[in-house]
Image 1: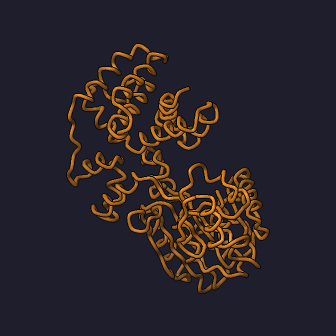
Image 2: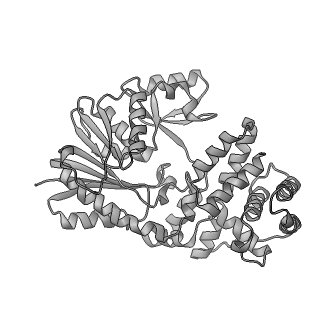
Amino acid sequence: MNPRQLAAKALNKVTAEGAYSNLVLNSLLKENELSNEDKALATAIFYGTLDRLVTVDFYLKKLIKTPLKKLKPYTLAVLRTATYQIKYMSKIPNSAAVNEAVKLIKTSKESFNASFVNAVLRNLLRSDIPLPSGNSIYDISVGYSCPQWIVSTLIRDYGTDFTSAFLENALLSPPVFIRVNTLKTNVDELLTLFTERHISAEKISDTALLIKPDGSVEELDEYKNGLFFVQDLSCQKAIELLGITETSSVLDLCAAPGGKSFNAAMRAKEGRVVSCDLYEQRAGLIEKGAERLGLKNLTARANDATVYDEKLGRFDRIICDVPCSGLGVIRRKPDIKYKPQDSFEELIKIQKDILFCADNYLSVGGKLLYSTCTLNRQENRENVDAFLKANPNYTLLTEETFSPDKNNTDGFYAAVLQKDKP
């Protein structure tokens, strides 16, 4: 399978079958022996097309009279990936993008559409189709390739200027932040190791580095030896807000993939961390991560965060990083943008159930972190307000909303609540 074919097949699985982008791409890359250069090309086309899908479809709708949803799925995927190459990949000759797209269709079960694909793409090359440049919801949606309901939600909560800045930044490559394992090394020692190995790295804080590895972070010896784990700076700052001490007991109710638990365990050196996830398999992955990092004060277990389990006991600190719509991380997971709006609505009830259940585990005087990787205020401050109204024995100590355009982080919300009375 060549890189363009792989990208189109992966895109089709995401858009037509609802598969997760990272899982699909990783699976196809493992199944097909491609050179590093071809892997990079396939990845760039796949994620680039997903990033720009709304805008890509805007161009195609100008050229195709038939509704796009009525086109054969693989034909549409090939048209989309080719359109992305033509409009956004300047190093690829337009002729190559067109010719390779036609070849893909000719060798597929939809070969009868080869002439159609050729005509559409040739017409795209000849046409000068301007993008809308206003500030309406539609204009912003097309210009920054984001569904209108998300644009509308962000404008409602933060205004037009914030929305435009956030969505513009969401189309850029996300930074890779790592949290240094201070039980094994320190930030300056790790920075020196990276420098000696010609790995680009920049010190951000006493525990964080910004790195730019040439390949997968997981392939680095420093990663394999447990000297760090990947964690966005927003998550690192959120854990700092919780004020974990060396003797704290910490319960992480929605822990997978485990980053916040790992960070907490490094702070609670003489304390303990119980890291929970709904699924046994994911709890097992947290255990493996803790083993790699040498975190002996962390235990992982399967647990339903919406149901109180008195056997867990009481804790000084609780982390409630609840499942959410993920609108803050669309630059890392662009397929989130294309999930149906109603698929997120039931999440708000789950979030509240988890937050209200967490109260049962927190000791008096303890602190609770409520966080999400979304910027939807219905999932953030409105949930916190509902909890505070029902629990006047709590105080909101602090809250922060992070965004890539202001903090160079993912979009993230964090609120710390203190339990003042029983």
